[in-house]
Image (cartoon, rainbow, N blue to C red):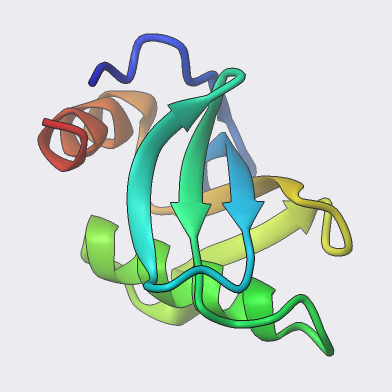
Length: 102
């Protein structure tokens, strides 16, 4: 798998990337890419922010960040979201994505 199709943009305190969420999966995992976004399956349902919380936890774990450093900046009620990873520049995000998606 390649991270070439994922758009990484500068954000206020780090980098932003597009995320595509599949709720109610059999497990929580980063599964690759889809339509220019990082594909994340979560076991949580899309109810009362549970899926968003699961996405934040998965990304924080994958990128070695605290949960407070992963912010859903748009798409809170959508499967397609923009997430900011505070403290990471685009090069650091690309390097970690490369390791995650291998």
